[in-house]
Each structure stands twice: as structure tokens, then as C-alpha cells.
Length: 269
Ligand code: HPA
Image (cartoon, rainbow, N blue to C red; front, side, top):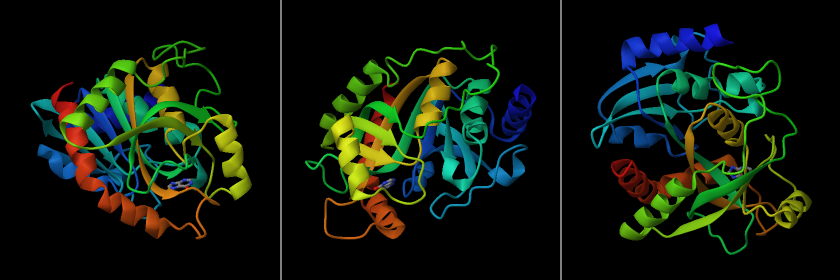
């Protein structure tokens, strides 16, 4: 595993260079790579060990450039457990970011609103997460060079970064929600009964990504900020079926607010 991480990092370093901040862009949010100046792009197909991204709305490109004078690496497209990859594959890019010097990781996603106060288009600062997949990217031998066998998850989402995001939301007129993100394995959307269960368990939003990335980020000592774009109300809340097109469309509508928020957060990091 360590060689695989170093090989991928070496290839990225040659074309794109190192970075101090990393951003994982969720469904419908990939255009944010345009914010980068002097950016260098590498398709995932050119990075050794990277799986191919198979989901519409996930382009599969690594972008590194400057934003507010900081070196920022952005992943346009991520890997999901439901695509059939191991969680080591899913989280390989986070390990690579650690090898490239990324200390702060901003993880974004599209999510269904479980909290009935939410509306599609809302942005939610993730306060905590629930792993409903039953698996962990840390299964197997511990990578001692990256972190401890039993990493602490009591502040999975950095309190200072959360406060900064809320401040930036106010400054930019972007209304922000806060809440707990639960990851289900997918790829089918949840049943209404599962959504009622998640609500009882304390979830405000549900999605099919993010939790393994946060676990690996925390294992490797990175600070994490998580932002969900609530693209739809979760199953059973409204009298309508769920579909990926709606998720992509709402992501598109929220992109200006998303960009304003991320720009001002990154400026203040
Ligand atoms: N459920 C799971 N994942 C999602 C959803 C949802 O309702 N919306 C966007 N990603």
C-alpha cells in the first residue's frame, strides 16, 4: 500500500506539484476547479494505482493550482464503495494528499436531507458523521507511517474550521445549516423506513461517500471541513421518487453559493 501511495504521489508531484489544502468535489460541484489559477490537470487514468471514476458527474481529474496565494489540490470526481472498489482504493487519493503535504482537507458531497427543516439547495456544515456501511478503510495492517492503529474520531470535523465556515457563510450571505451526515453504502437510494431510522439515530443528511475519506484523513492527522449540498429531500419525505438527475441539477443551482463559501474559507485558512 505504501509504495502504491508514493508512486501515485510521485506522478502527481511531477505534473501538478505539492499542495497544502485539498478539496474533494462532490456530485454537481466539480466546476469549482475553475477557481484555481495557473492550474495543472492530470486525468486519473494517468495516475498509477488510481481506479477509473465510473459515475456521471464525476470527471476523474486531479487539479492543482493557486487560490488566494495557497497551493490547492482539487479532486474532480471521487471513488465510491458502491462502484465495487475496496475502501483502500476509495481513500487512496486522501493518502496521496497526505504524501503531497496536504494538512487541511475540505470534503464536499451531495446529500439527501433527512432533517425535515432542510430544503434542496441548502448547504450544510457537517458537525459529525455516522458510518452505516459496517466497514472501515483502516481494516488490515495499520500504516504506522501515517497514523495510529486506533485513531480518535471525537472531533472528526475540525471545530475551528466549522466555526470559520459559519463565519464565512454570514459574511457572504450564504445561509448554512449544520448537521450530522450518515453514510449508507448505496447505490440504491434509501427506503423511507431507513430514512426514519437514520432520523432516530441523529442524522440530518444521508449520502454514499465521505465517511471513509474522513476516517483516513483523521488517521493521517489532517484537519477536515465537510460541506454537504442538500440536493433532495431523502426518501419518503416528499411524494416523489429520487433520481441522480435531480441531484446533479440541484448541485448546479447551489454552485454560486458553494463557490462563494469555499473561496472565502480558503482565503482565511
Ligand atoms: N441518499 C443517498 N445519497 C444521496 C442522496 C440521497 O437521498 N442525495 C444525494 N446523494
